[in-house]
Structures are given as C-alpha cells and as structure tokens.
Length: 173
Image 1 (cartoon, rainbow, N blue to C red):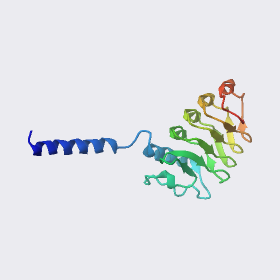
Image 2 (spheres, rainbow, N blue to C red):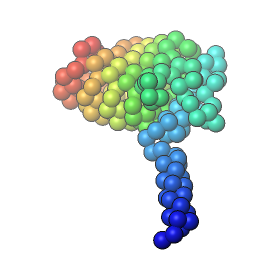
Image 3 (cartoon, rainbow, N blue to C red):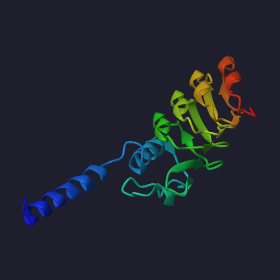
C-alpha cells in the first residue's frame, strides 16, 4: 500500500469514527432534552419558569429548574411552589441519571407516573401538596437508592405498597 492509500484509509476511518459517535445518544444529553421537553409539554406554566427550556438547546444544564452533574448529566429537577399544573409526563422515566425531583407545592394532578420507577439513581422525590390521585405506583419498589419520599397533601388512594418496605435506604416517607 502506498502512503496516499494509507492516508485515505486513515481519514475514512477517522471520519467514520466521528460520525458514529456524534449521533443522538441513547442515554445522553439529547435524550435528556427530549425527556424534559416532554415534561414541559404536559405542564401548564403560568409564571413562565420553564420558558427557557428549548429543544433546540443542546445544553439543558443552562435551563432554569434543572441541576446537572459536573459531567453535564441532568441530576435534578426542582420546581417547587411555581404554580405548575397539568400532569407529569411519562418521559420523566427517561431521565436515567436524575437523583432529585422536587415538584412539591404546585397544582399538578393525575396519577403519579409508574415510569418514575425506572429512575434507579433517584434519591429524593417530593411530590407533596399537589392534586395527584390514584395509587402509589408499585414500580416505586425499584427505587433502591431512594432516601426521601414525600407524597402528603395529595388525593392518593389505596394502600402503601408493601414492597416499599424493601427500600432499605428510605429514611423519610
């Protein structure tokens, strides 16, 4: 092989490598933007606190009410006492790195989405003082890292799932 052919092969490999890693990530920032935009689309935001959430923005870490880790992963969603209403979108289950969700003291209604049970890194969940109805999802038993759960002040019905007793890190409920 001559030097020109070797360089051409090297350039092709480099271009292919760049293209294959620059597509939409399945669990990266792109999927977090999609998940957050889904959440926004299900909420009514009379005070405009989610106004700067823009699907064209590649960086949700610059958005209000969103907290990110040092490496740019969404780890917190905190919008307490913001007058939000509507329902929590099932897309919340796609925020795979989230550790804290604080949506207390709003007017959010509907059932608590079972997709929250997919959030394996979730440590703090406060949905208190909203208008949630229905039962506590049994999928909450998958939240092995959950330390704080607050659901008071809602219209929940049924029994607390017995499987929540297996959440050994849960300190406050």
